[in-house]
Image 1 (cartoon, helix red, strand yellow):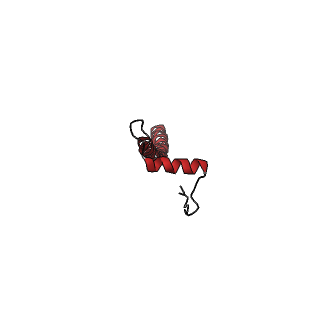
Image 2: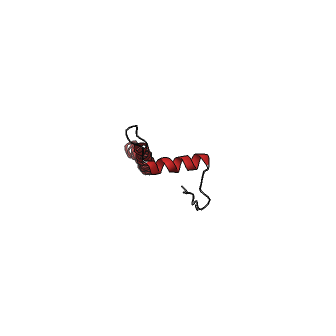
Image 3: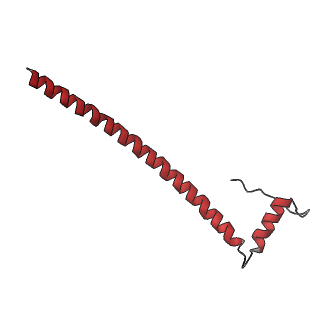
Amino acid sequence: MTLPLVAMLVSSYFAAHAFKSVTAQKVLKEEIAALEAERDRIRAVREDLDLHAGLLSKDHVDPDYLDELVRKDLGFTHPDEIVIPHQK
């Protein structure tokens, strides 16, 4: 009589831990997906920053990009220009 009871208790113990393990694995997969999306977003920002840093290298400065930065920072425009701000 006690052997079947002990076997049932042991089985329920392992079944409960298996359920927790499956739930934890699902949570970890969701967290991994969220972190991979964040990594991809950061990678895109870094590529954009690398591009702009390359345009301002010490060997060669892109005149169009330099003009864009100066106008943006100082607020200079010609009277006949139409300024369309770049939204991010």
